[in-house]
Structures are given as C-alpha cells and as structure tokens.
Length: 130
Image (cartoon, rainbow, N blue to C red; front, side, top):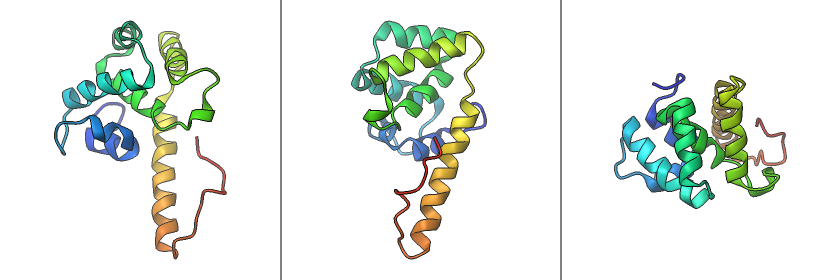
C-alpha cells in the first residue's frame, strides 16, 4: 500500500488509469508504468515526471498523476501538466497532503453508489468533494 491505498483501489478511484494497464489486477510497478503512459497524454514532460519520481518516489508520483487525471479540464488554470508541476513543488516543500484527496475520491465513489441505489438520482448538481 502507498499512503493507505492499494493498486486496485487507485484504479477504481481514477478510472482513466485503467486503459493504460496491461492486466486487470495491477501491482505498483504496473501502476507506475501506466502512469508513465498517462503522463504523456496529460501533457506532463518526461523531465517533470522524473523530477516527481525523485521528489516523492515512483509510486506516490503515480498516485499524484492519477489524481490529476480525475480533474475536469476547467479545473486547471493552465494545464494538467502545470497542475502536476504545482503538486510536485508542494511535495518538495512538504506541503502535499494526498491523503485528503484520496479520502475525497473515496467519498465521491460512495456517494455515487448510494445515489445509484436510491433510484438513480443524479448527484451531479451537488457540491464536489474535491
């Protein structure tokens, strides 16, 4: 586990990562490889990816990038790559708190499941957890 999250849970919380995986039950090395492919599509340079891996470790860099992939395009001031750059800078300063974001993603998934069981009500009009 990395920061209390298993590889299969990360895939469930960050669905865009799934299409970059080679097998259905990924390990952390699989997640890191998938994130390296995902980073290209998010516009994250290879040098920034390498910097992130050095600053926070490969697994946590992959978690961070997967989290970026969950954000809607209008969430970014500049680009997903710029947002990821800011997260790397926070990690270097000891100010990145991904556990909060992971819990918010978990809550959002739980709310979606409960909304689906309650007759399919659409929760999109409610506040976003992140």
